[in-house]
Image 1: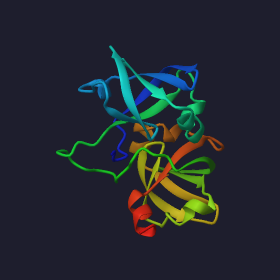
Image 2: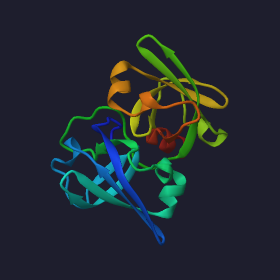
Image 3: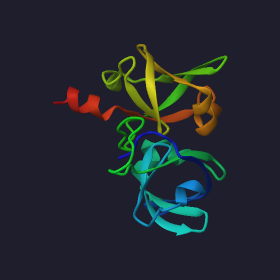
Length: 192
């Protein structure tokens, strides 16, 4: 379980494709402190298990399903990714409940930049639309955000200058793909 509060931007050092499996190495600083083998880390909102740690790089295995169902299948060497360690039961809880299980990969349809504000309009499929409400929660590339407008084929989120600075979202362009995880509480309520 995560909160969608990004702790650090990591750098992809390598992505190696093997038979039925891929391996990714990510360079980080802050997030490695206290991390051990078997820990869960959200990488751009995708929950992965640490399988190796070497100085300032940690490694993860990726199944084919993870590569095809998330944006991690398209990362390259030196790509920047949002990182968050799993939530501790005895810590503060900011953001919202995030599982690290991506519901949809969506394209950014439009970016509206204003002074001290960026609005991202992100594609929305009919099947997921029922989980979106204005002022509800959504996780985009591992970042907990408040839903703005909900239209027929997109939803909008807003980035304050701090979010732009400490996550990768401020560097996205129209057409870029992002991982979207809808609010887990909305899923349970609507499916109960």
